[in-house]
Amino acid sequence: MDARVRTGLDSVRVNGLALPGAGRFGLLCNNAVTDRELTLALDLLLSLRNLRCERIFSPQHGFAGEKQDNMVESRDGSHPSSGIPIVSLYGRAREPEPEMLAGLDAIVIDLPDVGTRVYTFLATALLMLRAASRVGVPVWVLDRPNPINGIDREGPILAPGFTSFVGLAPVPLRHGLTVGEYCRFGREALQLDVELHVVPVEGWTRAAWFDETGLPWVLPSPNLPTLDSATVYPGGVLLEGVNLSEGRGTTRPFELWGAPWLDPILVGRAFTRQARAMGLEGFALRTVAFEPTFHKFVGETVRGFQVHVTDRSRFRSVATWIALFHAVRSAHGAEFAWRQPPYEYEHDRLPIDLLFGTDRIRLAFEAGAEAIEIARAAEAGMDGFEAAARPHLLYR
Image (tube, helix red, strand yellow):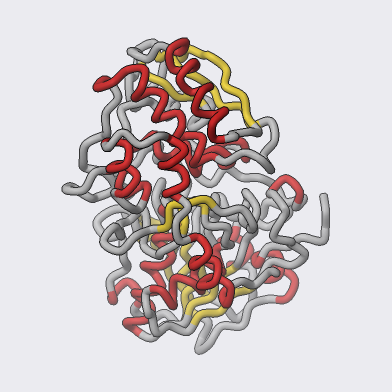
């Protein structure tokens, strides 16, 4: 492995971590965060002198990453070997309450991310920052690389009025930030008065993908098992907002997609026309059939496609799925539909609007706009975001 890239946790293993007061800290993490030697973050931090972990906070999917689906809550509990209390932030509360932070000298955050705004771990991190700001507890973020690189970004940008648990900070759908950079940007965007320290990644360049870092890939949650799934996820996650399977209940979630009523021949023809007009490259579609073991269409034969990324430097996931949705709508008309609420604790707004972070894209579809026009509209405001994010970047 390439020893030049070290996560924030790897740096702590070498250099230790100085926290204020008596070193009593709360740790926001899950079992997917490890150092280069696959030592769990909790175990490594427990081995450090002058620190005492008082509380563990777990994000969506549970501390062990065992919960498969959205809106499947985790209960509070205790760590099996250390006995440290585990407080679920995807259960009765998603933002820590003041009493949950009582008696702590600091918060330490070490979370995996997959580079897409709707992945809720970073929303949980920002909610932790907000809670810490209210009680005056400083926060340390142990940074990690953006696995799908820190240069490429894809819209749309979260619009005012569309904040939710799948989007708290005004960043693009594919944001191009590390965990630490996201927290720095979010602290300013949400106007949080919180002391924030980032232990940076060493040796990482923004153009690097995760498989170029030499770090071990540990699946961050059950339905993002590989870097391939993270690569398609910025657009593939939009399947959660429509009546198409996103491949949950298979071994290739977000790469496989379809529906029992879908005609791959008709959709393939319509999509080929769109893809050529839009200049979409870097992938191939393979016709498939699959039977989900849970989630949408469980036990039914689903007809659709697998998206194979052949050149990730040219692949644009969001534009590709905009074109795919357009093709399904063209081929099947009213059979293609927006999924109805609830979605991630939102009971009024359409899931697709929460996922895009705006209703402009849905309204453009409904007005009959061409896919190329919709994809262009999705990129609106990107230059402004680039300028706003620049002061918060740690790796140039």
